[in-house]
Image 1 (tube, rainbow, N blue to C red):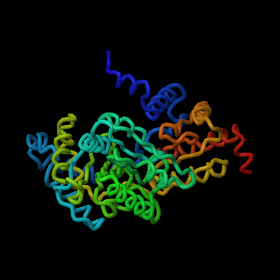
Image 2: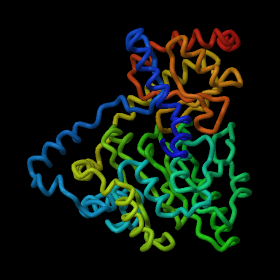
Image 3: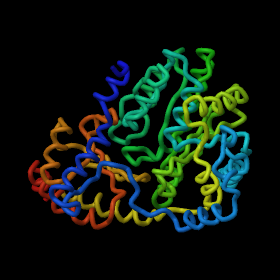
Image 4: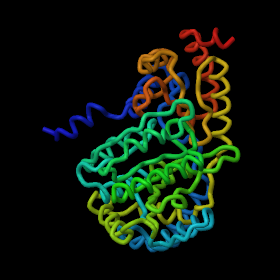
Length: 400
């Protein structure tokens, strides 16, 4: 018999993955070209050409025994130093290799830092809507997830409720900007206010509260939007990053943690995070991909491709009568359901072979997430279907 904790996880398995599997099933029946799957944040834009070049060069240059062998649990020192210097050049920070830990993607990094920080019963605050796996990551270490309800007008963090819900048990706060599922970028003024609240509460309760910035979408922003670098606003900030979206490498599982010197108990936390990397079974981040990303820190994915998808889909859905805040980053639309039960709305859309994810997955019922990191042909092909869905729910007639 499996563990009781796993029984709950199996029974409440990811709705995103479930919808993805449903898309594959429908594609087998109707043909992939007739199924419009917007469920998974799986980049459709190919990795930059420099990735393949770097891999080939590394395989030809490096001693294969060394390349494919163990290294420090924190990762190759030269890779960590290259990342630190890249961050310093971009954000005017002062990091070195001793502030970077290479991780098995952002998910691996979050698990490492939560393993490092949490005692059973410690509280971790998240802002709805949020990536649903945060629930499991916190529960992995017997922490308690505290959810701040969403501001559905702006989808900026609800700071009034945030201040009220910080307690003496609060150990960490997770923020995700650009945000999954809304695409909203948290404004600098929002970050400053959040930092001020956390500073006050640290002093009030005599505790250390760590701000964990989950940043897999940092590079995916449109027009002139700036994403604040949070270590510059609050000393106890730890950054988790992934190359999954920025370089279209989700299956390679490569990312890093930034643990600045300014973090309280830095030496102990950095050492513990290295040990957590080992005892969680990661041991170290993938060796070949560490070397690869270090050579590709200036490579960029094709943001214009996602931008065209965003504009085409957002403009069409708005014309059809759907309500949605226009995303500033990432590659998701968070659309208000025309009926209160967004799961029923998802089922209705599925009859048109259109698949998206209910907002309750992100602790924000009444909305659905549409992932537009798909081919432009999929966007174009889906529009007549979206129009039919709008007509079915009486939206398109109202919009006219």
